[in-house]
Amino acid sequence: MKIATFNINGVKARIGALTDWLDNSAPDVALLQEIKSVDEAFPREMFEDRGYNVETHGQKGFNGVAILSKLPLEDVSRGLPGDDEDVQARWIEATVVGDRAVRLCCLYLPNGNPAPGPKYDYKLAWMERLKSRAADLLEAEEPAIMAGDYNIIPMAEDAARPDAWTKDALFLPESRAAFRRIVNLGFTEAFRACKQGPGHYSYWDYQAGAWDRNDGIRIDHMLLTPQAADIMRDCWIEAAVRGGEKPSDHVPVWIDLDA
DNA sequence: ATGCCTCCCCGAGGGAGA
Image 1 (tube, rainbow, N blue to C red):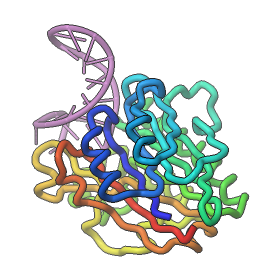
Image 2: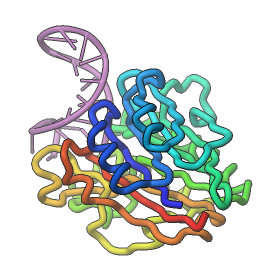
Image 3: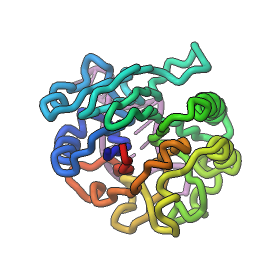
């Protein structure tokens, strides 16, 4: 089973790029972030026509997450637990049933800039809630994946120019420590379990020719429970998508599971 | 690199992103 996470930066603006990608790369499951659409306006028929089941958790204007799956989705849950006041659409999870069941969590972690400030406080609080949900997933001792736009540069090697990010919410020591606290509960960071070394990025700014200069950062991640890591075949980044027509500023990150 | 784009809101110019 091939699963991709992809921050599409607006579903309406990405109709062409997204359908081309689905037709050519053919994920079994696509976990989408930043759909920037309410559920009612999401172009679900476009995906259903291609054989995908569609589950969305959107809001007006920004944020929003969705799951597309060629296999049936069960037990869909919307919103990250832990704060009834939080109205931002950044979390959807569901179980996909192939040869075996895998719990899929699709997340769009807050950016947090400027830091310090209320947006950074929200990011750290959100990560504390994520840690709590992550601990529950581990306790279930089943294959589960938490994938999406984490807005975290884990290590200096995950940025082409780490010095440019030292005061940014994506790379502040406190942000990275919060990410490690979640990983250290017992998760495997899928990409780094398959590929080491610098030069692997999942985001390039639209400005100043960042893509042409390969001035990127790696901020889209997949965290696996031990039972999911057991069945991982491979994990990779589909960087070429960034060079396409009207691209998102992010590219898909993939995992292949024996499931 | 405290923002050189791009997206959204709408129907002008501002908020948000990373």
